[in-house]
Length: 407
Image (cartoon, rainbow, N blue to C red):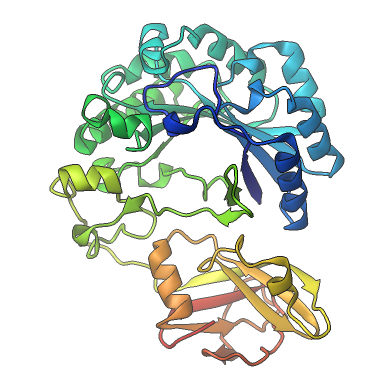
């Protein structure tokens, strides 16, 4: 699982939609960032992803990446990619276990310049050339705004040579600069969805049946991108478990609190994985563009899968001692078993996060699969809400379903 660490908010671009517009002058100290890298290791993550602002402009960069690799962790970046336009920098980062890059590119040279207010598109393309063929988990992220929504096809053409990348179209979030310039930057979701569908269909036709550039989207309700529901892509699909901002005392679970599924979504068969609408968008435009799908069945259960365990402390709970803040209240399950604390997690997208939390902590029921088979068959143990010690599961999965209260 990945841990996302924001190292500060300074940047060498000036994007119109910048989430951190008001705090671009704030940077975390090197000691703070290093402490959070050590904390990510302590929490059992296998990758640290540095973000900002722009993390690659920090003079402590090489000190941080060296620490990450010495701790046996993989390295990733959320970046504009400008440093990665230099082959020597990419070579050095690969030596420090670089495995993941989430990089911005918003259109042709002219469109990109209008969006980021810097003439950096050629350097970004050079970075993608340097990264392609390296076996990286590589995403090219295009934030969809009014300035580029009608120019997505040329972006697809520019990205076709990067055959091991994913080109992702992300609806602009009303935050920071995009909140201040909401009317100037924000297209309507129905129109943005239509243009994203056109771009993906165009790209797929260009790629053909063989391997090549893949596609994804984020921030758009599924009813606005019909046929592309399985291409949804966010921090959770990228296996981010926790994240931390500058000044925060500890990691927090990745959540979708900036998004809302309004009343119109409650009866939709696609509700589970669908992001709904950004809250700021919903407050401005409402939900009249949504077209809920009432046909089709939804899943009625989900699985918690074994992640790891640690020895309990005499006279106290080790999880409480080490801190519960980083652990997702809905997606993480701890079970006390034979002197150990066993950790399970669910990656399901069949339920919205608010539904998961209600099932696990309210009106739900939890079953342990005690068989030794490859897949659950019958449930041989049931736990309802209780503070008592729990029987030890021998198989690495548990199933939750609506029913009675569970922990």
